[in-house]
Structures are given as C-alpha cells and as structure tokens.
Amino acid sequence: MGTGTGDKKASILTYFRDEWKTLLVVTITGILYNVGMVLGPWLEGLMAQCLADILQGLSDASSMLRLCLFYVLTIVFVQGMRALKRLYVRRFANDVDRRMKKTLYRNLLSGKIAKTESERGEVMTKALSDVDDCVEGMRKFTTELFDTGVVMISYLVVLFAQDVRITLLALIFPPVSYILAARLKGVVTGAVATAKKEVSAMSATALDRAEGALTYRIFGLEEVRDHLFEDELTRYEKAEAKANVLSASLMPLYQAVALLGVLPIFILGAQNVVSGTWDIAVFTMYVSVFLKLAVKSSHAAKLFNAVQRAQVSWKRIEGYLSEHEEEKWKAAEPSGIRIEHLGFGWEGQKPLFEDVSFAVAPGEIVGVCGPVASGKSCLARCIAGELPHEGTVTPQGEGVFSILGHDPELLDATIEDNVCLGSGADAALALQEACLADEVKALPEGEKTLADEGGSRLSGGQRQRLGLARTLCHRRSVCILDDPFASLDAGTEDEAFRNLQSWAKEGGTAVILISHRLAHFPELSQVVCLADGKASVGTHEELMRTCPAYRALFELSEGGEA
Image 1: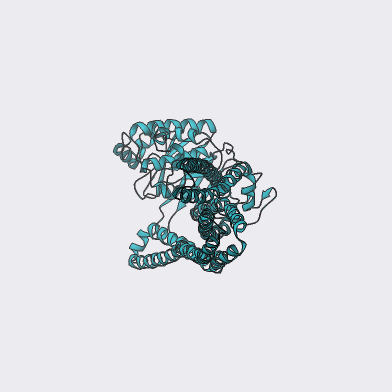
Image 2: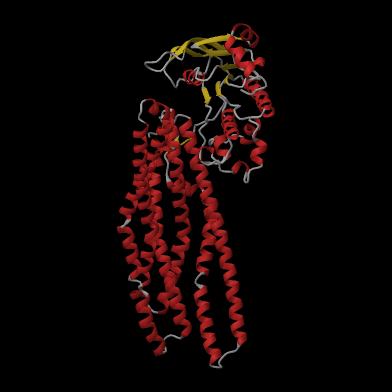
C-alpha cells in the first residue's frame, strides 16, 4: 500500500518509541528484579554453609535466623519489582494493541486502503488476529529482554567470578540450544504462515457456505459444498496442529540441551570442594546459578519462536497500519437523496421491484415496508451502491452513505471499539441513543467487555442495537437502517425511535428506515410499500386507503408485533 503526503509508514520501533515512559518504568523495575535474582542463589549458598557450620558447632541458630529473614525480605523485594514490571509490560501491550486496532479501523473504514466492502470485512477479521499475535510477540520480547537478557548477564558475571574454566566448559551447551532454535526458525515460521493461510481459507469457505446455502440447495450443490468445507477444515486442523506442536514442544528440547552443562560442573566443581578451592556455599550457589541460567537459555530460545510468529503477523498487517496525520473524523454535511425509477432483479429472474421513486429530505425519516421477499434489503443495497440497478440515485450535496444491515457485522473486540472504530468518539452517547447503555453497564467490564466474533456474547436485540449505536456514532448524510428494532420490546422500540427522530433532525441526516414493525409508521412523513414488484409511496393515511398490501401489513403488525 502506498502512503500519501503526511502519512507515517508503519514501524515496530515507532510503537516502542512512543511508549517510552511506560518502558522506562519497565526498565528500572526489570533491572532491579533481575539483578536481585542473583541474591537468591548467593543466600541459598550461605544458608547451606551456615547449616554445615551449625552441624560442626562453628555457628548457632541465630545466624541461620538472620540469613532466613534477609532471604525472605529479598524475595519480597524481588517479587514486588517483578509484579510492577509485569503490570507496566501489560500496560505497554494494551496501549500498543489499542493503537494498532484503531489505526486499522481508521484505514479500512475511511477508504485509505483500497478494498471493496466485502474485502474490508474479510481483511478486518484476519488483521485483528494478526494484531493480537504481533502485540503478544512484542510483549514477550519486552518481558524476556529483562527476565532473560539482564538476568543472564548477571548470572554470567557471578559464574565467571567463581571459576572461568568450569564456566567456559558449562557454557558450551546453552548456545547449542540457540543454534538449534535458529536452525528451526524456517520450519516454525513456515508452519505458522501456512496455518494462518488455512485459517483465512476456512473462514472464507465457511462464510460462502452460509451465505450461499439457499442457492446451493436450489441447484443441488449442497453436498458438494459440504465436502469442500470438510476438506478445508481438515487442512486447517492439520496446519494448526503442526504449528502449535512446533511452537510449544521445542522448549523442552532446548532446555534439555542447555542443562547438559551441569555435567562438567558436578565433576570439576566437586574437585574444587575437595581441594578446598570452594566451600559448600560456593558450590551450592554455583550449581543453582547455572541451573537458572540454563532454564533462562531455553526461555530465550522460546522467545525466538514467539518473535518469529510476531514477524509473520507483522508482515501481513504492516501495509494496513500507516498512520495518516491529516485523517479527520467528522460528520457529513446535511443532504437529502432522490431515488428515481429504481429497478432491480437477479439475472434471469423476474424483477424484484421496478420504477421505485421517492425522495428523502435532510432530517426526514422515510419508512420502507413490504411482505417477506419483496426486495426491501435489496432496495437498501441498490441505494447504497452495493448492487447494480436500473434508474438513478441522486444525493443532494455531499451524499455520504451509511447502511446498517439486519445482521450487523461485529468485531472480536470490545463494545467500545465496535462502536467507535478508532475514531475517539463518545461510545457512551451512541449506546444511550441506541437504548443499550444500561445493559452495557451491567456487563462484567462495561464498555470494555469483549463482544467476541460476530457479537456471540450478546443477544440478538443487543447485537442489533450495538450495530445501531455504531451507525449513530459515525453520522453520514444518508443513513439506511434495515430492521434496526428487531427483537426489541415495545417500550424499548418507542425510546429508540424517539432517539432516532431527534438524531436525524439535529444532524440533518436523511434516514431510510426499513422495518417489518410498523407501529411508528403513522408518524413518518412518507412511507414506501413494496409489493408484487411495485412501489406505493405516500403518507400512512394515504396508503391505508389506497394500498391493500400496506393496510394488511399494518393491521398485522399493529402494536409493533409482526
């Protein structure tokens, strides 16, 4: 993706640089924690020597008590620094995750990334997963930089200070684990990349199978598509299993190789004790420090795998994360819309509707209704330019459209992110207008509660109102709402409709309201009724007199229940 004037090319280093204050706290607490880790083996060695002295009558219990007390205080301090460091590492990861996703939302939805609407939804789903993997790799790198890097340097200083020869012999083995990890880098990276491709392929196949279920059934291709999906699922399972096995099972191998260095320590270290070069305290401390070093070495090898996984994800999303300095989120200017002689039909079939003409003024709400399969949703997509059609759709002025389908696409993100999409807008206000604020407050984490993929944690009515809140949050000059009050009780529908009226009037937004619930249609200035391929346009009173189809629909749905 190319970047224009004022664009910042995405870079991993940018995220580290911009979070320098948080990372400064991580650095200070990380150094104190990991240098303090060296005190543990030293005190353990002193206590072992003290115990030997007590048994020989060279010391008393009070000396051991003092050492134990100092040991406990050291552990409390070290673990306190560890907890503080982890808190700020998590804060760093959360801030980066939020920033990446907001940039992604902005670029996809503002058109900075040249994708069709369907492609944008597919890219969004894939990219959110890649952002999570990338941020997790950054978090592990930041953590292990101190938990592995700093502490290993401290351990090495202690080991070399005691015996250079034994240390050099013991340290032959940990680098072997690094070399092994480097050699397996290509295998791990390739397996992870293949698994991600299979995830995308399976998602696309599943979506196609669901959306085209009726078509496949009509043409007798249902069984064929089922077999294709099963084949894709099998490939995905194999690829994911291979990637997970390689990522998770290699650490024991790295650790076993690194621990082989204990052999020369036991042989040569015992000789040092016998010769009097070392005492029990030094030997115990040396063995303890080396074992900790070996374990940390395997962690470093594991870190390589985590970074490799993050690199795969970063390469996939890098082109979507350029930051646009001049990007501005603003409401569209008020403008109406005129639809003239609109017609649509699937190829080779009778037109769903034809010669549909009506206009919507700024701040006005026009209702659209009709029997099942009369073409209401297709009419909405034609007006929004998503389907080819006959006739003309002429915006008056800026003419920026927003459309809310009857099954809104929700992201695997928080309630707040699903509403704001990185715009920095007030999610609480939009949720209040959609009559969802009180229910969101009752959720475990409020606006920070995860909606999960497709909003699976929410009820049908909550998903619809969350989609409505997102639409209201991002005002456009023309707003098309396809059944936004589905699954609502009469009282909630009344409140939501009043809020919609105020929202449209205050912002001058032209609203096309498609609904099978007609309780509020008498309050609308204009109603469009689709039936038998034709459109009847007029006020509620006019259609009740002249359009039998509308009268039947209204009488059936009186009180708002269809």
